[in-house]
Amino acid sequence: MDDGLVRFLLARISDEERELRRRSPGETQQVWSVERALAECSAKRDVIGIMQRMLILRDLPLERQVRDGAGEVLRRLAAVYEDHASYRSEWRPKPGRVLT
Image 1 (cartoon, rainbow, N blue to C red):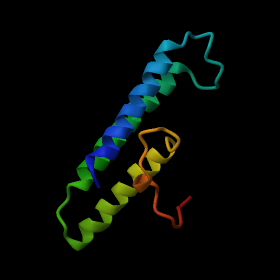
Image 2: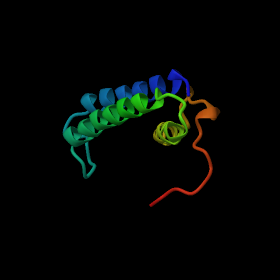
Image 3: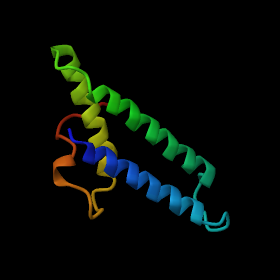
């Protein structure tokens, strides 16, 4: 997995934060507050950092599953931005069963 996906995700989160900060409290008519949405952006950054660390594991058989799972988490986070001009088709999540 290349660094491009991580950079893409972090840039989209920054875009969301800028948009949230630009809005006045009266403009936000969602159930969640701007503060909560900003906290979610921060949490996504933390998750991306954790996944990045998991991606640099060595190539031992057990580690491969962890690394592949981390990559899939990043692909799924990026999928919500599929309509963005910088989104790459190779970042699409792998088809298959998703645990619910």
